[in-house]
Image 1 (spheres, rainbow, N blue to C red):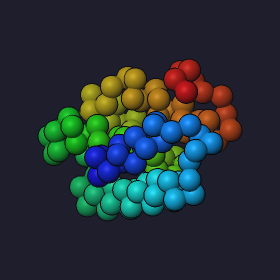
Image 2: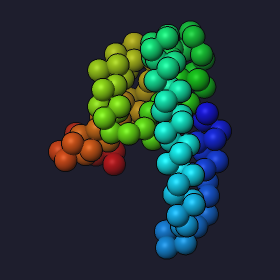
Image 3: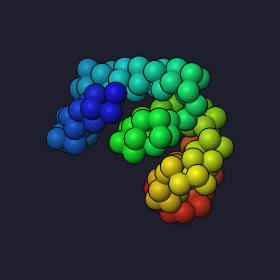
Image 4: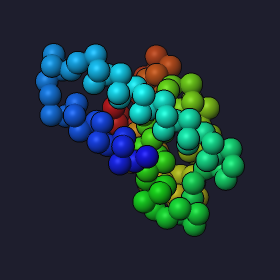
Length: 115
């Protein structure tokens, strides 16, 4: 899931915004929807991925996928991400970035200045 997420975003890093095609945007949105749906399934079954369950790479991958999920799911996951940070499953940088992203998505000012 992480590889697919990053691959589709690589296309956007290689183009200027005015060169994005509707197909590029559709592919990005499709990958994000599919990855979000799968992450929701994983969380329902196992809870938030932990180092013990999936290793640090798996935790990082889940976090990246969550960063690219829809705002309502991000907002729903805020308390879970806070617990993961408190348990040293996420870095302070990741936690701050996520909190700021949710706040901005709500139309509020960011707390940590990461965005």
